[in-house]
Image (cartoon, rainbow, N blue to C red; front, side):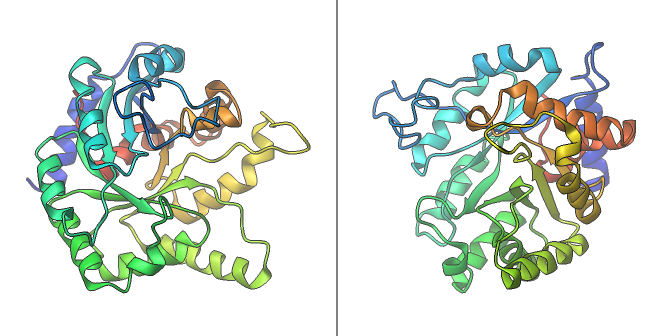
Length: 306
């Protein structure tokens, strides 16, 4: 199916998610589901993280987000265990809010293609996440031919790559997109705090603005709220400079909404996380609002309405 045909068909399907109470479907592209009580437990979060170490499932997400008009969620797998990818997919039949998952597999590994082919059979498996997690390192993996070959395979079968880490990701993403230009890449948890070192900060800004040219690279705006003087401001103007920078770099076509729930609860409740970006993109107009809250995520992840 050609891209234009795909997006037209997917857009028509997405329109069925619309509610009379919101201007259009709102897709949260970054939430985590897990259950420490299940057999074998979970590798994350740790028991010491008392606010996170509990059962977190889609039914709670639905109750929490319904007042904000959230109509779909993409789960991002936070476990390095291969079978935990299947555990999330098994949640889908009884949880229609779940429109996709970004799995956790390691490109370059001996079982990568076999596992990817297995999970790719499920249309809810949208891509994988890789970055500075679980002792993994993009800097260490990028020089390896098999790693790049596996990313090319990922692109060939139509899946995407989420990347996670920090400011150094900007340089990593430039290198990946140079070598695998067809790969759709989503940078998690922007905006980043710029490096303190002046040289590193200059390099980060240079790479960030280089990404303006990379039309296959998307920015997930899921790290907006900050602590300042022992409080978390709820005023948009406090965050406007960092949001304006992302708007300047990625524009209306490549910014995506994500909450990072329930990790976001460590900073602020869901309503505070949502309201700041809702106010910012509402002021940009209906077209920009729709792109940020669902159309851009559809282009990046190729999710389909259920």
